[in-house]
Image 1 (tube, rainbow, N blue to C red):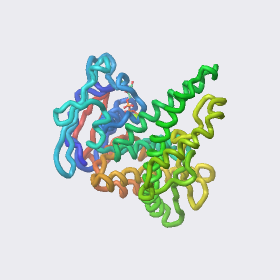
Image 2: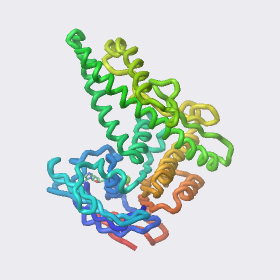
Image 3: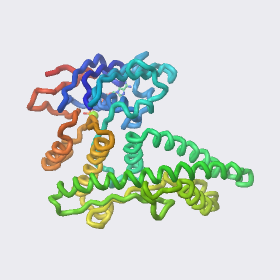
Image 4: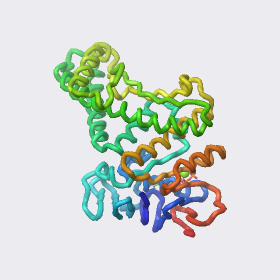
Length: 371
Ligand SMILES: Nc1ncnc2c1ncn2[C@@H]1O[C@H](COP(=O)(O)OP(=O)(O)OP(=O)(O)O)[C@@H](O)[C@H]1O
Ligand SMILES: [Mg+2]
């Protein structure tokens, strides 16, 4: 997948960007706070995902601007397409188009442009909280299966309502009938998500495992597994004959912890508490791994994400590397370069690169030079 034209104006500090990126590597360099990450963020949100910095639309609109716009033309192996986003002062000013046709929401963009972003924070994937790993997993699955992101959004909404009800101090006023309805819905969605996660983790394990082998010179073995707070063992996709049975099991587990949930005031079990277990030669890398081993595992997981998209969608995603190369030693830099060879890449850095081709200087939100 290749972005061939990119126009941005009024998004963050970006102004009058009119870029014709190269099919290979594009380097955006410049001093701090010039807008390099903003440019990658703008590309990223055009793939239908929420900003990797957690920004909402109102934060994306340039200060003092009435409107902002991102227009992008990309081609996949079949054809060339355009997508555009317009933002205004209020949510109702937001407009999205694909090939000139209006879309209802950003999630409808999923399945158009595929991007994988890599930031220095991603190097914390193994050591960070379970939430970091869950959201990594959820993002990856959502890109490949847009339906999953819709189910996840619904799950989160109902969970929020359930937790709000559990927090009610006067438990007598709690409507247990309402809890039954929520539990039934959470069980159906949670069981569905558990299967998707388990299947995706085994695919990620395959890709990341073989990458780690190469990176470590066949010395260590990486294993990623899915930790479910609900199921001891999740049947594989093929073994799930009856999703209803899984939902029933899920429901039973929710019921078994309801009393405790009421006491604590939140839902203890469910896909919102799951995690990824990352081990090197059978030892938790989070608890026992060195800093370098943790970085290598995180690196392989992110590269596996790109590999998975490539495999499932038959398209190499556009790779966005935000300041990450400077964080890596030369062996790992070389490894990353090899792993993403063939993809269109946008790299940000502070120093002026030696090569000039595909290099752009970013200054005050504008691209100054285009070799
Ligand atoms: N909505 C907005 N409107 C205008 N400017 C914004 C907006 N949001 C952020 N900025 C500005 O964008 C600048 C940061 O841009 P960005 O994070 O892209 O910098 P950078 O070039 O990646 O810097 P670094 O090298 O430090 O990572 C900040 O100066 C910030 O004030
Ligand atoms: Mg930056």
